Image (cartoon, rainbow, N blue to C red):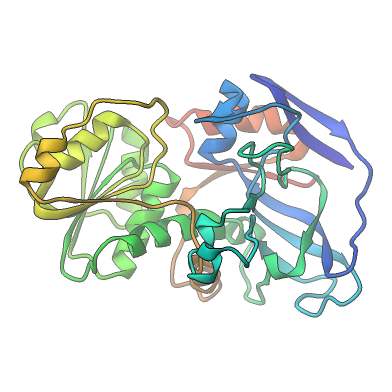
Length: 341
């Protein structure tokens, strides 16, 4: 079978691998669609994602759908032929954070397609892969495998909104109009936000944000005054830009909340702490997701959300290098996926 591996910075290879076997409690899955995430781009183009450095060949890919090929002994949750969303999160279920219901903070987390630990946890950009049955979510609805693969990034957006205060009737700013930014627009709408504004420095992402429900879009590089005055109850910094975080602080009303979702690449960094103090801002982090993955699958399968405007293209697995190149170019794409040939 074909497998995509990142060996080092800008060194991505499509290699032949042995077909894995499903053991007790495991499921053999044929890749349906796998979305290329920002972290995958960082691993490929930089050889690292923040502080997580590629130290051995890494199979990327943590947002995927698939079709069940075989099941191992004892599996009852899915059966061969089922179309599924795949959770990349394998929390231990035993540490203090897991017992408190915050599995995304698990002390022993194994998150697919991540170099956060060594040996690395391999991802899903391969024709077939094996997963524990509790990470498989059958989807009976008539929905494409490409749409199902949005469960993971939608869960990120739902968790971000869940980390903030109640949004009913609130004004919301989202900095960054990529996949997570646009999905955060959708999540904020689901939560009852009265007004949703989105900022970015590119026109195409902003057009997509309008398509999925943003009331206002702002070219941050051309309209600096648009974010200079306090006007938003809740801000979600999704772009991973320190300049955008400063804009969130400036645009926040007194007593407002800022939720940091994006990964800012370089630390330490300067920060206007006095503004946080004087305006009594709540600054929160949102890391991955927990129960929100279940919600995301339900929202997608019931078609309460429409993610089709975000899908910019699909490439066969053997064309992964071309897929990564398009995914990197935000003037041409939002979400790019690889699929099994």
